[in-house]
Image (cartoon, rainbow, N blue to C red; front, side):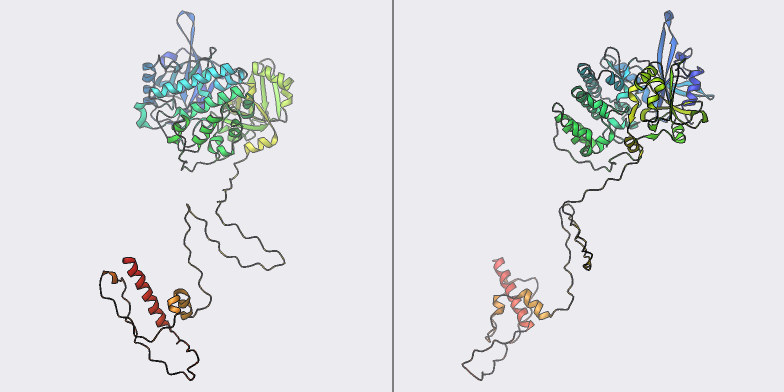
Length: 567
């Protein structure tokens, strides 16, 4: 059965169509537009529902409704609930969960939900922004994230998607982990991975890996990010995009071209840790934990064919109404030029428009309450100084009267861009030129215009893995004289000596030393004596030696060499 989408769930929640007995009298928390507040993450949409409790108090729950298909969710969450119950004392940063197979009625059908106690607190990224100038508090939260990942692994488990959106920090600076869709437990090992995690926190080669080491890379990235921000707070302004802390997936895919890696190596307090992270990014996923822990100093280069940058633009165009309407319920990053702003003062609601909202084919950003006050402080009455500016924002695409919009929760996440930066985010990635091998032959320079171009000759191929391929010499243009070629190849000092008329030497007796793989031909008969010269006093010219004589000389030399070698 097809799962409902955001609009369907919002209508059902606002109509209080809960089939779960614990939520039957619940009331959703709504925004100033009278819509149920919702947060998107992973497979589910999370609503906040308030239920009457004993003594006149009220209890709040996080109700997660699935709008994307997951594999065997009931079995996974049953195992997660048992695990949390068994380790509640040692893993107090986890929250109880309950999977309800028939939890809500949508369009006449029952669908599952996950019910959890509502955890108060800020998302890690929002909390960091509010406390960026308090290094001792950054360090306190950093240590908690590190301990949480270590304790989970010691229990044989992993969260599976450690990132800023799944880490909440309460008023006492205590962290809480939420969203257990991708959690690894030993009893779930045969089911495989349900998700791959947030790309800005995951190793490029994680793929479908599923084990208790899933959180090692993400925990290291969070730990290093917070430590670097403690020493250099300006990194937040330069590298936070609203969907990360400071690292992006492109940094992990190609550390050598990363501006952030280059800047972090200049901070002496984290230089060694940055070197390990860079080495881990270039290694296989299985060797990554040993590299990050310092147990292994040499990495096996990854054999994957991962892209150096995600395919396609990094952001969606805020002026493309059709594309944004098709992404309702998804968390995305948008970039666009603000065409108009308006503040509705009775409700203190701000509208940032990227087109004519009245014609119904446009996208807008909406903020209210304290957000409106801060927008006026920063951008003037009605936020007029935003008009004509290029901006970017990350969040969930919601819908109001069947038109896409995005809610602005924090003014800091709305970033003003230069036009060139906006175009870069909206443009597809440029193909990266492959580096030229060092041993590759250089192309010959083009001849001058006044000179005739010489015929191009094929260059020999560059060596592969250090080995050169043998290439036969070019064939001669003219047929050489056979005698002349053999004379050049096989001539020696003995062959240049005039051959005497004495009979050939006797053959050595047969034996092992005389063994030859190829028998030599029988020697020719001795040549006849030369006639007496006309003038005895003149030196006698040596007789002309033919091809056959030179052949026998060569065979004799080879035989002697073989005899010596065998002795």
